[in-house]
Structure formats: structure tokens, C-alpha cells
Length: 314
Image (cartoon, rainbow, N blue to C red; front, side, top):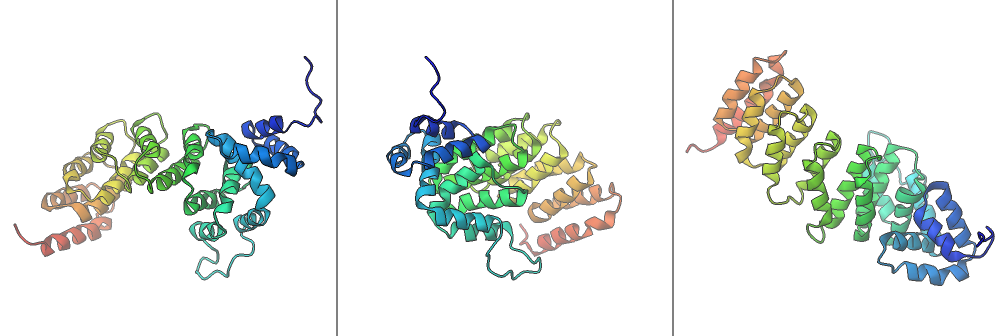
């Protein structure tokens, strides 16, 4: 059997190329399918209902180029920050969350464009644009985006920053329906010391909004592990602050007694100023003497003293 000539009309093969390829190869396959819009529509309509999320999202993306070109074009303009409302802040430019809201306001028709841009064409050039795209995914709120997001999270070739953004988006999309695979993925990443600290810290932070059973104990076991880096420990200490559970005080005290890392000491002081008790105050004053500039820590000690003074006596 010989290969078919390249110009043979074969929508199924071209669609499969679009499903399995990315970048310029995806664009070439997309162009071939879209050259035959009348013939392609029944195929795309059928594939859009597929239980295979890759098939369904690629079909929805191609259908958008038939039915939602205006919306896709406007989304691209917003991503490139063209035609946006006047800026009213001292920075002189819109911030990514605001740009994402402008993009999401176009409507749900841009969800396939977001999928295509993030996972197929990669047609963005800066971390700022990447941030806008993931935030827009959250704003649009299409939960069927969770599988491709988690696939990106699991891709260790991808930068930790983008993996963290994809995880955040998956968890926020999942929040509407309750804990599921995104939460389970976040817990697994958090517990895996082979994953980058940046990603593990992000997992801890994003789990606060939908905490799984035993999260506090998991976090305590990580910071008590002597192999855990100061950076990850610091991230988790901030998470303790968000959880606002005073039962972590002994763990915070142990960390404070055992470190000379001034960044970590500063974080522990900030959190203990909120969660600490009189024992914390004693520990903080002792730790203060080990720092290069003890005066830097006076404010947190004063905050805790003031809070304790205002609390009713037992």
C-alpha cells in the first residue's frame, strides 16, 4: 500500500493531525480542514461531542473559526492590549486580572480560542500574556477545561510558573462542583519532594480555598522535614496564616527556634504576630537577638503585644 498523495481530500486525517500536533503543524492541519467549511462542519459537530477531551476541544476550536471569528479576533486584540478602555491607575497600564475580565466579557465563545492558544498554537510571547490567558480561563469558567489544564500541570518539561498557573485554574474551575481530580492532583504534587518548590508552594496556597482533610497535618509534616528548603517552608508558613488555626503554634515555635534564615524569621514573626500567644512572644524576643538588625522585628513584636493586651484574660 502506498501513501496517499498530500492533496488527497481527507478531512478525518487532517482533523487527526490537528488533534495530535501543536505549533506550526497544528496550524497547517487547521488550515486544511477550514479550507472545506461545508464538508468539515458535520465532522466537527460530531467530534465536538466526543468523550475524548482532546477531540472535543480541537473540534470546538475549529468550529470557532467558522462561527466566532469576530470573538476570536477581539480576544487576540485584548491579549495584545489593543483597544482597551483608558487606564485609571498609577501604573499606567491594566493589570492581568483586569485584562482577563475584559477578555471573558466577550462571552463563552472564546473558551475554545483560549484552549487553542494555550495548548495548541502557544501564540503568546510574554509571561504577562500567559498570565492573562490562564486568568481568562478562570473567568470564563468552562469546567471541561480541567483535563487539559491538569495535563499541563503534569508536564515536567513545562516551567514551574506555568504549571502553577494551570493548577490554580483547574482548582478554581473545580470549586464550583466540589473536590475532585484537581484537588487530588494538588495534594499529590504538594507531597512529592521531587517536584519543584515553586509548584509545591503554589499547591499549598491554592488548596486553602478548598482544603482536603488532613491538609494542616500534611503541611506540618513537610516543614518538619529537615530536607525541606527554606523557600518552601516560608511558603507554607504563609499558608498557616491563611488557615488561621492556632494549633500550628508549636510547629511555628520549633521553626523559629531552629533557623537563622532571616527571611524565614521575618515570615514567622509576621505570622506569629497574628496567631501567636504569650509563649510566641517569648520565642520571638529570643529569636530577635540572633538577627543582624533586631530593630527590624520590633513592629511585629509590638503588634503581638498589643493583640495580647486586648484579648480577655483567661
